[in-house]
Image (cartoon, rainbow, N blue to C red; front, side, top):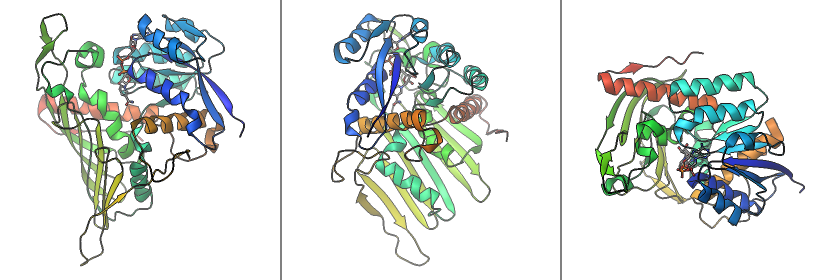
Length: 385
Ligand SMILES: NC(=O)c1ccc[n+]([C@@H]2O[C@H](COP(=O)([O-])OP(=O)(O)OC[C@H]3O[C@@H](n4cnc5c(N)ncnc54)[C@H](O)[C@@H]3O)[C@@H](O)[C@H]2O)c1
């Protein structure tokens, strides 16, 4: 199959910038796609980060320390931007105004004001395709839950719980980094860092909370700075958001949690839906498994746990008997973004990447959650139309 090459620039060559490079390098993993990303330009403030790309990615032709120079490169069609949250606003706006398509990292602005400015730039440049990175819904187990929601399998929804939990911050000797400072990560703390992942599916299902009562925790107050001193660790470590969802035909509580300190959990993303006709759960803790409990009145209540086959949104060379993992979900998300760039509304499969509007909705909820924690009150959320 002939492929349209999408020429990418990467701004921010750290942890996530490298993940994209790895996904692009194993594009042969995907079968039957008519598009392929090629990273031709990179930009980072740190020379060592750029050196990793020039050492490992043979397609890189141009390197920059100033992202504005990369944006002036006419050969670049689209940008992946993965920089600290305080830089999202200006860099995303400049990317959008340069006319290049953007896959930006969450939370899409350090706060709601910054996010609003990014969306305003999008409105002025409607031909630019902008999406927000969020890969977990591409796990086959998550896709199965999406299908069951679309098929209305759950009956009356009793409650929903979704979360994203980490635990490495339990170690008080872990050195501080930008993700634990308000100036660079934002006041949302763990919500800004992890929350879009948790909200992606609920928002896609139309489950926008009417109100929120939050409980935010700071557990480790200071951390080593790597130079022999202890410095304040300012951001919220854990957040529990108790919300209430009311849709046209459903009303149910939804508990959303983002935790940097959840003992024993490393990158555990999960969603549990309980309903009168079916309950189901997927968690990356057991990435092969999907649990479901179908129910008819009076019948036995028994969980069924199956090993979900490797059945991804985009077909791959991997056989169905094998396991799917984090880097596979990144590859699938990248396929969805490139698919939309090349095929527009005629994407090869229907699940598109998180939208800036969904990211804006996450900001609404996190802003209300901060207010709830500050006041101890339940905060109503106005969603507009
Ligand atoms: N989708 C996911 O699963 C996931 C996981 C982790 C982080 N993230 C998001 O990715 C983004 C980056 O996080 P990360 O973990 O890759 O961080 P990181 O610290 O590993 O990388 C950030 C990079 O940005 C570079 N940088 C800083 N200022 C710059 C500038 N002015 N111009 C160009 N480069 C600059 C840094 O030198 C660094 O290499 C954040 O928005 C974060 O929330 C997403």
